[in-house]
Length: 264
Image (cartoon, rainbow, N blue to C red):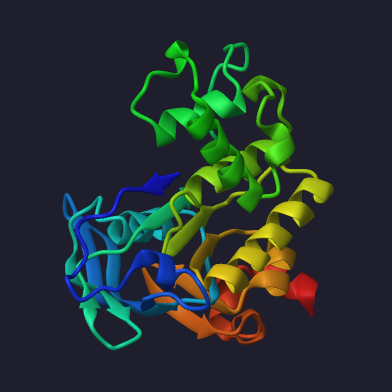
């Protein structure tokens, strides 16, 4: 699901141009970001760069602060330090457009709601129970095409498989085109065919639209295959680099001894 942006810096260039061969955003900088809530330190001195055209996998044990970091990126939680959005001319943008795909979407599977209804409700101010106009229907189809899911447009939500639902959520997150795409355990419980299709679609989108992608996942084979960068988090950054470097690190062996031993 896509987060509406705040006004951009006046120097920011036309969005249609930005999402052609290159985007205006170059990187997101987290500079000494810390979060303290009710006396508990949730994040401490986080220094990270998230680059466009790169998929960064964020991993860590339960309670490591992964959700808190995402909330900081979305400006949903107070933090110290700075989060800066830098364009390809080294200028600071006031904000970026963010798309978010959650682990799951809780809903009543008996609801008489179609995929078309769900996405149309996010694209139009007109209540869907009054009918979806031709223009909005075409916009829904265009959104679904980004996730290779046009054939799902008239399906009932309750009839979708886990993989199909995640592609619908991906289509919503990509409309309008974001600068940063956050995938929060997006394929948990999805079968292997649905998993491969979802991730291959994400890989194509990364290349085509030069998106910065943050993936939160404990699927280690997925991280090895698709991540360009990997960050091991436990309140603070323990290790970062390529997946191979992080998997081989002492910090990863200490955080996930069973996984590390199995990989040896």
